[in-house]
Image (tube, rainbow, N blue to C red):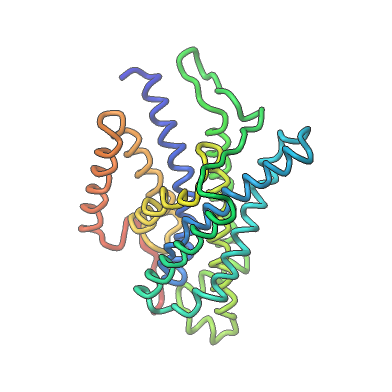
Length: 300
């Protein structure tokens, strides 16, 4: 293997890492705080993708001269739409299943089917795609043999920015302090005056909004259909469990190791064999470390 191929494989791993991380961040926040196994998380990602499609369509119809910046508008639109839906779902549906993880699993799986059917009704069952802005088209020529797609560079930068923002929110703000307090000791947090129900709702909405950003990113590398979220939901759960529930650093390192390993394995074997091998490695690691690579101490 020459140097150019090695660089391209490593970059492919970084691209996969970025999408996995954006999906897994929201899932880790929801699962870590409330223990909710949200099987509808992929459909929240799909909503973000469809919001990006609607934004692009709106710019194309009413402001074609500004098509170059539509993606910068679509990112907050996708976040806010998924945030709002996540907040509504938590208030109207998910809150009744707390402390019942198996019921939550079944209920949110049913919810995912309802959302998929809703997307088919509204957007149709076919695939839709969005055009890339002109400044994200084409490659970045590092050398005569190494060409890196600009849209993938943008995705990696966005994932890094979102991860930094989540870290600052959780560790440098009063809202983050409340979230960490409720995670570590819900009863004591309520006793000192923290509205744990409000924290639950906003945290679930935040995780949903992050899934919406992941959906927006997905439109830059593939087309969208009602089942798009199912492509990443299993891998996102694997990332969260492998890295350790309630550990932001564990989620980041887990997503990176899984994405890079899968990318390199796919160079030496078929895609299905690479995924099966990666899953076998994760199972072996979890057998010896069932709490994941990183665990956070909590008060119980």
